[in-house]
Length: 284
Ligand code: CAA
Image (cartoon, rainbow, N blue to C red):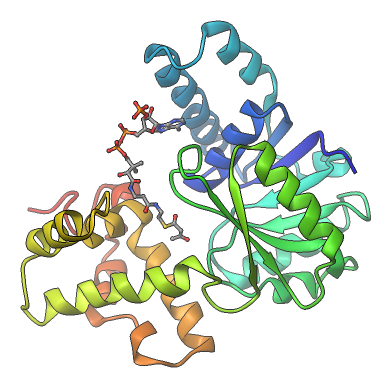
């Protein structure tokens, strides 16, 4: 089927980035949030990005105006009753996601795809509460969404080949490169990235080196754009912890066990850039 109307649930960093990318690619986008304040924040993030791109001369003011016309906000999931594709990007909490999938299943036309941007939770657990398990898949974007070229398509044991193919075409239409992964903890990227980030925290806990030196080591020694502590602040300490816990649940290997320092940082409300408190940001 030809996808035209896209719904995105959740206007946080990931959801607003997905909405921005889809609107730029020509889709009509409806972005849903739970209250007016969060909705305005999400829409503002998207409009702010287009303002930044206009200021840099990367898009024209006419293009920015055209993109803006293609994206609208809503507080009512019922408005998704005409969507060809819905992508959820809400909090990484399985109960919340299952509740949302059940609600969406009663609203989004039967036969249309409902995808999750989860970074590590089992897709099958979400598909199981719907009456369309073949039309549910993971569609995992990377932060910052408009810049990062990868999308992981996650195929549960029930996802149909047609669903994977339609999502592959959708990802390509956004200018992304899709890869297909099985519905196993961490999929491809986080299965490798999360233990690397956790190891960096353990090295720092054990006094092997300072955060700055560990970051410099990986940037200059391996050519990474950010060191692990910069990336932890960027991705979110809470997001990293939830992903680690989800993977550890499936693979109880010490490499995936969240280190105490990461737990304490999250328990104390240090989430990274998103709330201005993390390893570097907001540090005394
Ligand atoms: N829309 C379009 N373009 C945007 C944009 C937006 N919203 N935000 C930034 N850009 C563009 C900028 O215009 C800029 O373009 P030019 O270089 O052509 O001017 C470019 O992106 C880079 O932006 P900046 O100059 O602001 O920043 P930078 O050069 O320091 O790069 C970075 C920032 C892209 C984040 C880079 O540091 C990087 O690649 N870091 C690693 C990010 C990473 O690893 N992400 C994956 C995290 S893991 C994850 O997301 C999965 C998970 O489940 C946890």
